[in-house]
Length: 457
Image 1 (cartoon, one colour):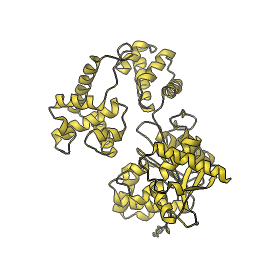
Image 2 (cartoon, helix red, strand yellow; image 1 turned 135 degrees about the horizontal axis):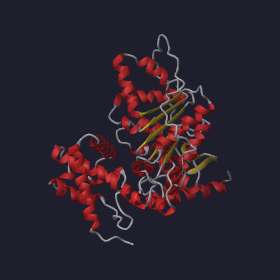
Image 3 (cartoon, one colour; image 1 turned 90 degrees about the horizontal axis):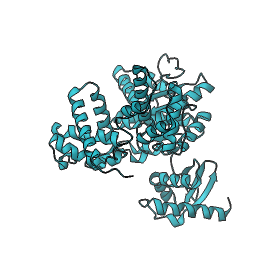
Image 4 (tube, helix red, strand yellow; image 1 turned 135 degrees about the vertical axis):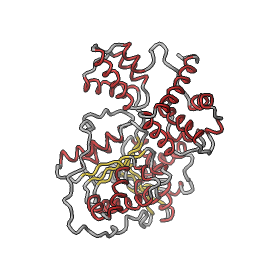
């Protein structure tokens, strides 16, 4: 690269960071320069190894995001010292472990894959275009393009779909590939079972000989220190022999409190790609694709209405369609506007204004007889904890706020606490009639209050 072009590139990059990343350390900005730029990587040179190490460990995500924003392309960022000194150490030697006396035959794959979760069935829009391109690249050249690949985003945005699409694509091109796809919870449970049975050798043999390891919801490692240690060595073993690792989480690596720093560092070695909530046009396209798959016909007006009234994610869109399809089947007639209104639980003419977290919290203080300060405080007694969890659950269901924003409102709790509350309440609602009555009652209060509010044009 010509010096003039390199100077322009670094100046544009630093200017963007100064304007959009106010919290980043800028101590050495004036001393940075571009080393190399190729199709998928930008190398930034610092004056000393110490500076390069600090920037690699604390600022690489901000630089990578800035480079992607400026170029509109998938780019990884890395720091190096001007004198060529090593910056980020690669994993140490693979942890030695005793191989099984009779090594088991490696599974071709863990095949609990949803047949619908393929690239062909994925609707691509501005919300997921970068992540989709990265997943495609990984499936076509595993172990060489973006290793590891880390996807993050809120619930229902398509992370699991993309992960499984990678697996489908690789198995189609190489049916004998040893593909391991599972949730992080399953990985934790299998590790615990292997420890209890004294069968760690077989456990390690399976995972450390994978051609592709895909772990969904990596935040489940939080609080499982021994499993984090095991996953760290599994990661190293695979990475050293250029096997592909793909991970998803509900937050970017640097915001995962409770995950060891050495794992956070490794997650940042490759590409971190974010999935955002789908825009209206993308939601409309998702609806149309799912309607074709289910044989449901709706007018353009009704389809757009459903898309506009279901703003959160593709999972909720599918839920609405399933309700419409079920009602149509039970009533033996084609879906119409009234049926769609019923499925949505509201009418076109009287759509409710958007709820805020504070609306939910204030309604809860009246229904449950608690104070706002208690909902936002540290007390964990059942009389306070349950209303707080219900509020978090409804905030996730009824508002567009992120896990971090909801946790912040309720006393500065982290995103994993909100996610746990959402899952716990959601699971209990199926069987706990008393809880269902409480949640539905609070929802009813919110709708009645909202219906009295003026609706903006």
